[in-house]
Image (cartoon, rainbow over all chains, first blue to last red; front, side, top):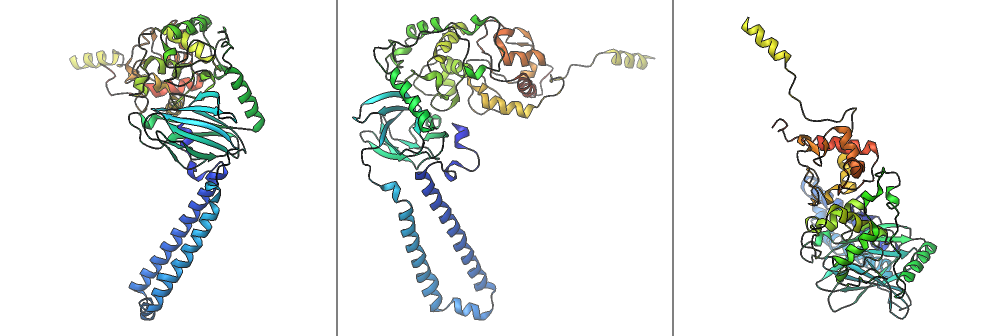
Length: 341
Length: 123
């Protein structure tokens, strides 16, 4: 999340979609005009103090007020208003209802993400990650489950509040594939500063493949894939692994521990008895780019650290620290979660 | 005569060991950048990392003074680099998993941990 929000140029000046680009263009125009006007004022000030008498008398005359005080700002500001509104007209185009829809709900302190079909029914459940096809305008239904949050992906659009009891609509579009960080931009208590997500823009065919696989996993009659004895996911390909793979946990036991520890009361894993809705959906947690709502990279170490003591990482978040789990139990649970891709 | 003996005794003594360092050179600055990128802080409190300061694993404050890595193997630079990379192999049963870093990167991280000299290396 942080790499995606920092860097040079700053994300707000580095648009990756048409709705952000127009605002960035406007911002640059305003900055340039501010520089020009400041230069004129400094020059006039210098002339008024140090300049020859004939310039001073002209600056003090009525004509200077008519030109510099009324005509110049009148023409420039009117022109700017017309240009600015034309430039950003796409931001206020009415939503037709034909656009692809994704519902994003702000929760303390993470984002619930649900993909909707044409009938408005949820077809994919996810959390803290937003997957978009490149070049397609997507309408986001922004909601809140508790307090006011604000949805902001600086590379893609301006901010929009998520208000309890309301549905705010925001149109976003990515023009090139990539990962774009997002944050909650409205103080929402506690670990607000650690409430983020990642937006992933895919090439259209990649996105179709992605969404088809996700929709298939939502089938209520389809059991979750059986835990397999694969060592570790791809991030570890260039890594030394212990010769005794048992030291990395047993995914089958991890699944049993997950259920026995009550994780399923808050978390859902499609196709298992874990059907909690209070916390982020974990059906695809293994493929997620981040943990803890956009704040940590996703690997075995952060997974264990989060489960073992999430309160020291994100103080006040609603997941208790599972500091009663042993090393072997933590490894086993993590080994199973990594396979939920 | 007495002075000569004192000098002889002093020179005969081995120097008090200084802070630990990584043999063959390693880049502590790179190590800190890697620590942040990998989010070692998810489990460890590490000076120079403002957030996170996880508590699943031990604090690494003053790590150059620690005698045994994870209470198990001598805190030498090679042992530490190997442990960072593949902890369960060095200490079976370790909660710390293998980390996605190369041996060279692990040495840089070790160099950073050894640079956390709190000026109290001889206690």
